[in-house]
Image 1 (tube, rainbow, N blue to C red):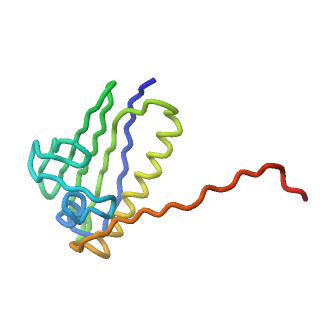
Image 2 (cartoon, rainbow, N blue to C red):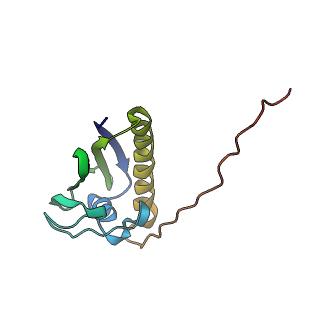
Image 3 (cartoon, rainbow, N blue to C red):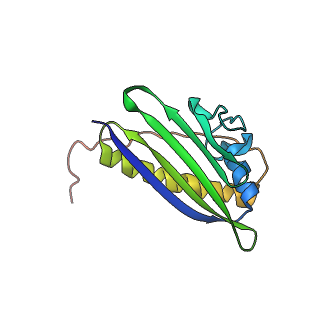
Length: 149
């Protein structure tokens, strides 16, 4: 059964709103995964989405739709903070179709992780091309019998 979700994550980032906006919307956005965004309202966004808000350097959003009522929205609201910092309010909403509680928990955790990595990218690598890497490890083998003590 489909059920909508909304995850809001807010964080302070060591960088200007322009640096945060650029990191989230330009080719350097490999801090999360490689993507291209057509920089205009109605432009092409990542993964077949459409840019629904384009207000550099403070607001960006995209929307993606699919079958069976599926949608996925991402929104970045960036405010200037004292000392060359920014405040980011990130909203991710959409639809999960199965195992809603576990999917929501996983999405909330990866959202916090992605926003942390955005902050690290802006603080230490702003403006530099990022490279996306995906490393998978082996599954933990299932124990066939309890450990003996």
